Image (cartoon, rainbow, N blue to C red; front, top):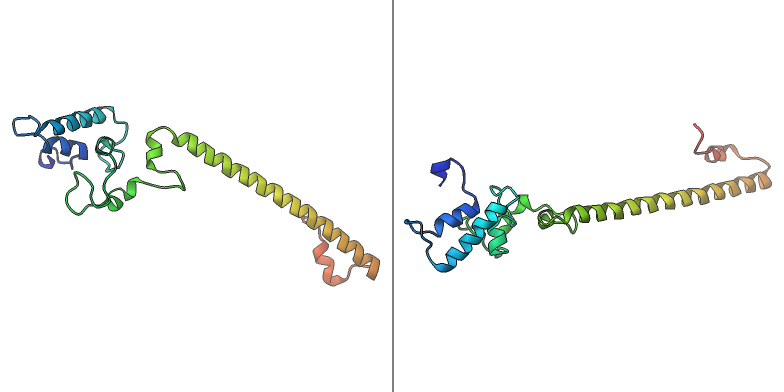
Length: 164
């Protein structure tokens, strides 16, 4: 196939070619059923089938790969190496989320969670700064009451953080 097109064949195309006889008939009835499903999946595919992925036509029709092999890629190829670049993970999001349309809702949910956490952190920071200001004012009042003035060593710590 590569000699004909000059490009590596997709997994789906390779499966179709290798499960037909020279006269174009299928090698058996089971192969015919699977090939028809693969052809349908290829015609309806919205992903780039030239990229090896667990969500390409072969992956959709034949299911998850066994840990020790990847169909249509030859001997010695394992899922961890074949799919590494096509399966980015962001916490509990994975490549399968992109193909069933739920990524946008999952991404939006994660964004909302992060935004809420950020807003809560900002609120906590403001509360801590408020408490800090109150404590510094109390310390300043105590120093003035006990010493009658603010010693030079402490003068710098009573500068308002908002002044420039």
